Image 1 (cartoon, helix red, strand yellow):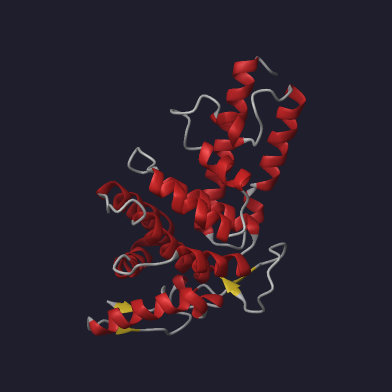
Image 2 (cartoon, rainbow, N blue to C red):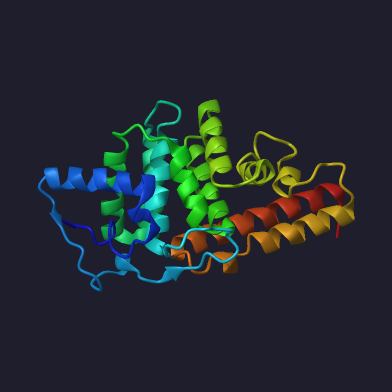
Length: 260
């Protein structure tokens, strides 16, 4: 297989910093294994050149950010989460494979899985990686990335304390607030937390009906898929899924309260 179309095509900020160093390790591993490296542009949809918008990110970086940067960054973060509890579970790997196939197709998934395989051999400090992401990726997309990572952590039906700890560290380094992290995490706790719907909307059960409505409108606006329209089809798809979950949380509160 020729490598590089998905891994290297169209990258911007990810060529530098800690993410760039990890990519360099992966490329070196691929070359050592005899893989052919191909970076010809324009021959694959994985070489997407669309520059990703960083408006509203508060970024001070001058480098462009592309869809490829976000995809490669996600693989690095996935490796961090998979190793968080010291176990590499089949359920997590199956979740990742399904996610990659659904979003990147067969060719993209194969390259991404090879990158992931090599990254799992490394001891990665997620903090500098997340800080690099925070400097180059807008807030809406960072929230979607955290949503995907929490989905991975829950893939085996449990949520280990080690996974929660590393994800909280990553959220802080990505510039996300504790409230934002808890709101996203609540979307995966329907079966374990009776107050999950309130937490998902960032409120408590003592909120008035008007406060519930206001919180829902705020969340629906914050997580609208249009805010990540340039981040790639995979991120947009996850945004739609999260918006669906937020709607479910609102409907659950309305049901319990008898709201109309």
